[in-house]
Length: 186
Length: 186
Image 1 (cartoon, helix red, strand yellow):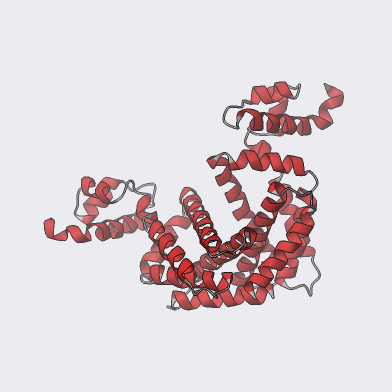
Image 2: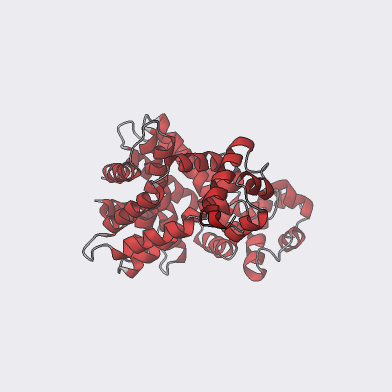
């Protein structure tokens, strides 16, 4: 198995998603995921604490990418422009594998507990963005509003991208949603 | 007890909040809430399914008030203007008792499970507003963005109102936050 190890995490993730879509999240066990991936449960637990985290393992990276981008945006950028830079980073992080994103979305929307988990992750992400805006000198209430608006765009754009029929670029859908929000609040 | 019955719900709510603030939500029992209110546990359960719902019993009314206001906004109103009308309705529903709101906020922010519950209620509220905008003929993605933006304003304004030192009108803080969001997204 040695020479496959570098891909073990990706294979486990694919196997888990396949099974969650086929049988449902609740009905799938870690042993089944490992077997489908041709690996052991022991290997599974080296990469994920439990079967739920297979779906959320990327969220720490996503937060880091977005906050780094936001904090690193040009000094003169407005709060919403900085949030836009963070959304571009999110599109780069999430937009590479639409099929994976689509299946993950199916699994999460089918399960109340997973939806709650996703909601909590989004709230943490919003707080992290607001914190990043604070470091840019944005007042707290403005930082929270801009961060929440950014998360609203992220959620709506991501869902459009993932459920829409056409194969569009996530970054494009995201920027279009920022423009829509802008024209809605005008 | 007969002549007190009309106020039983309010007394139970006050007693519960007092105890949640004094001892913590986890440490308070329904029996203690009823005793503090001078009522029986049986009476408690006529008004609330459990001790958690004392904190969330108002959310169905809030949703109804907001959606009714939104759907009833002038036909020519833009989506964000209709959301603003819903926010005014929220301010009317929530803004009457700042002390209650302040203590409720303290209890909820001290408890992860209650925070999650509040989050889920807010998400449902957002979906209900988006549904109301849909009935006004607003396209789905716009409806969701405008609803999410409205909920962002509600949360940020409510928290400012409840934690702020000055005794301001919630409606005023809410409208100020709508203006801030507008200038942020400009």
